[in-house]
Image 1 (tube, one colour):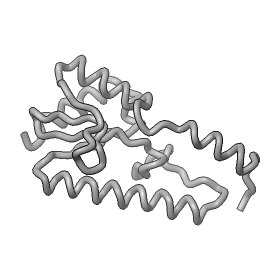
Image 2: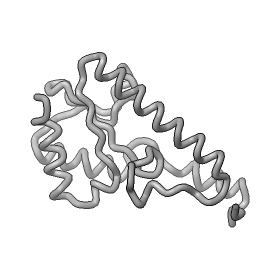
Image 3: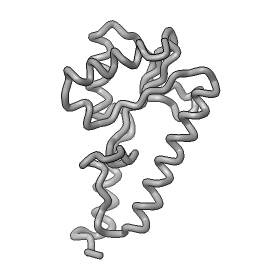
Length: 139
């Protein structure tokens, strides 16, 4: 196992700068949804997991997940850090477990749930198709 090249205090400061809301991928998705005419609410705290975008008219909750933090399967951005492997495996597994529980709770409440992955926000044309499909799927 290789050692971290920065002190624990500096690493903590770096990690504290990572935002959970209004991230660049979220902003891309929100902009495109608005451009496509879909109106939404943000972070509805009365719903499990406070979904990133909620489309009440369509019964749809949308999460914009970071590939690293939420373990996008077979994605190059979902790598495992080389230091403190046990810590990261535990932390990231809990994120995935929480995501599944949140998704199931929303489904049980009658919502449709869609996850947009961070890496998908890099190609606007494919993202547009993915968003359009989210509104036509099971509608």
